[in-house]
Image 1 (tube, rainbow, N blue to C red):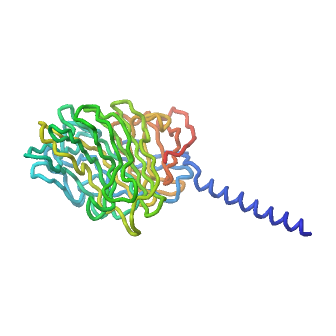
Image 2 (image 1 turned 60 degrees about the vertical axis):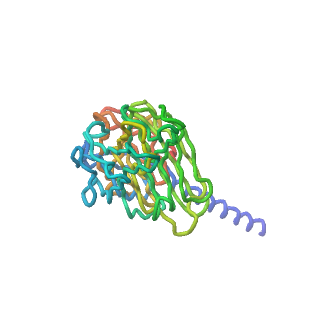
Image 3 (image 1 turned 135 degrees about the vertical axis):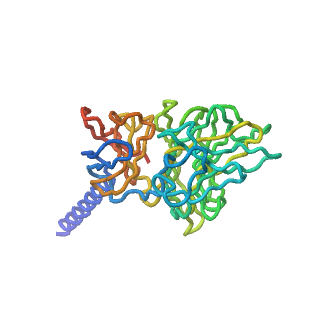
Length: 381
């Protein structure tokens, strides 16, 4: 009898373990796309049907392709200033270096954001030419953006010493010296291309402040940066960053995959997002004018959940990506507005759904009627 009771208890425990494991596996099963309806065109709403998308999607605070502005005018702020959401303010340390709309280079449409680090002063100093979103009030953030340095521009370095520093994007608390993450900062050793030596860094975070990575940035090429940060006051924090380039045929590549602790105190949070946040003044150059386009900001616990259009049938092979702006999200149905980005046509593109855990259907859902629809998946963190 005792043996039978022990055996029965063992069976119950084993069954419970199997059920728990099954539930965990179900909770992290990869997204599967079964159908896409709607017009596959820039600005059109599509409905994506499938399974395992997750219960919740991102809270999108901003998407801007800068098409609403006029060439040469300062980036708009306030309601309606971005394609989705708004810019709250412009920050410029010197009167003449506000970010402006510019039609010389772009990823999508005809306009981009033109920054200005070309500041002629008698000594080294700050050069901020930023567009800012305030009150993001989050511990989790996902951003993506394209950026470009023209062949006529210099990397922002102090003349003579080559003290180079370019903080492309920044999330921070009350100030840039409070609860912050730079996503990323470029710190090449000289003003000569390619510009290598990059990092996710901070002024005010717990423990190791820098996650170094290398990639070779050249003038005259568009690069897409995407980054996800989950910030806590314990060792469960994470920060990831990816780089890709259509111009350089660089497939989407993870450069940072870090875990540890970011915040020092309970209640810490990111309060602001700044694009082209800060740079070393380019005091000895004729021009330092980076461009930014298709800027995206999402927050919340599902910030990294997203819908992506790619140019290859496997996610890891994509050299071009465009992020859609989600309007509703459930485990089986997602609606989103298509953003064409630099795609000349979406006819032979592929669709990807990435869930809140960073898991993607690695083999894309083809957006062409004659393609074979596959299904497989992998975690992209």
